[in-house]
Image 1 (cartoon, rainbow, N blue to C red):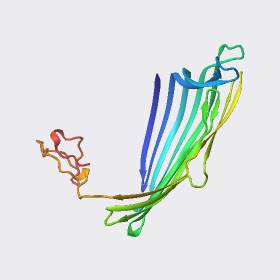
Image 2 (image 1 turned 90 degrees about the vertical axis):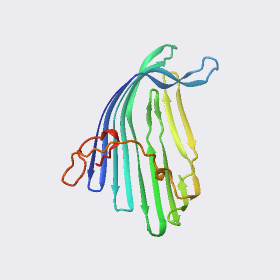
Image 3 (image 1 turned 180 degrees about the vertical axis):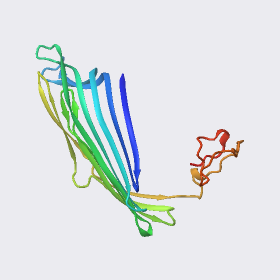
Image 4 (image 1 turned 45 degrees about the vertical axis):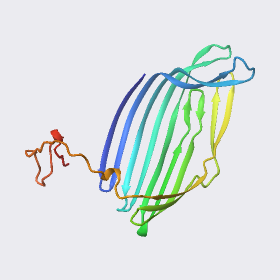
Length: 246
């Protein structure tokens, strides 16, 4: 059961759009990862998930999009979280005892796209996930990034693209450290995400799903809708299918 409280604000300043959300969450009987000694294999440990936790999370999400020009667009997003976890772990006597852990978790990234003459375009995206707090330690973070070039042909009916992902290194290392009264565990998980993609697309026909004709149905023309000085509709929704311009 999670209780969630959130407030968000959005603002457009010239060519920049900014939105920020602030939230607080409280979760009872949270599903938390727990590592404990095996009951059947001596010297082994078992990593599993149990409904043993109480978790409180406070944080903010910030997103900004900037139109540098009609053909260049960039954006940035950032997540800041503070988590406080409470649960139970097994002590040296094999008895469950209360345990807690707390810390910050940061993540964010950037993206951008640009259109040039003669159908050329460039897109880029990058994301980084910071270390995450666990009841018995911290799990390492990871990242992802990609950059691509696209060329449009024949009035954008055909396009050819080339993209590269995580090309600066062959792997990411997720380093995790878990600690308990009975053992300490260190693990390294490697993600091999380097890749290159060549894509080609071609549109056949002239009609798209957005251009398909709609069946005419009965509607009511609202001739008494309030308008401002520019002829724009200032009322809410128009009942009966009348047009609503905002």
